[in-house]
Length: 238
Image (cartoon, rainbow, N blue to C red; front, side, top):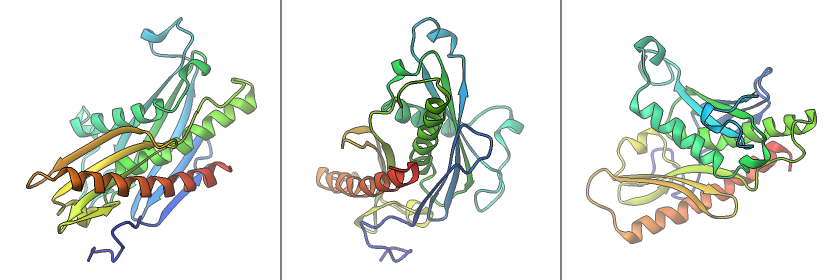
């Protein structure tokens, strides 16, 4: 029995609230159960120096956790003077995931910065950030289309992410903190709307898991992301 009482293939309650931020070109408050992440997308008319004069754009992401987003207060990374390795790894993952479904050559020489700030953490913050980040990015592109910056939305499909793991010997979908902290194996799947895999992160916390178990986790991720794509389409209005 899962601590939450959910079925093995059941997501937490998913809420995607687009347009949450008044000032950002695109935004989404994403809730995976008790994990809440605010995602904003901001247009920058300049690309990084190494991309200048190439006629293509760029998408980058930043990720952070508020000091009291977890059970105990943590210092702001700005106060410590540097980002942790975990933070850098997650924000690079978010950026790669969003770029994987974007036609950068259609953007022009512009950059979009997607900021993902964890308000409350209960497992799966990176997967929530990717899922909500896509909605914020789409909203930003919609804004650019309406303002005449672009003549089409340069997203060729959706992208969403979900965690899976083996908890008490059972493969389960969308781990919360209680499950994640005790899982025998956990994985994060980033999937595109056409069914393709963008990235997989999988780790055995105890004994190695089998190919059969991994394939079961993949099947659960497919079930979960199909539901997330439906939420995303509803959030962006189509």
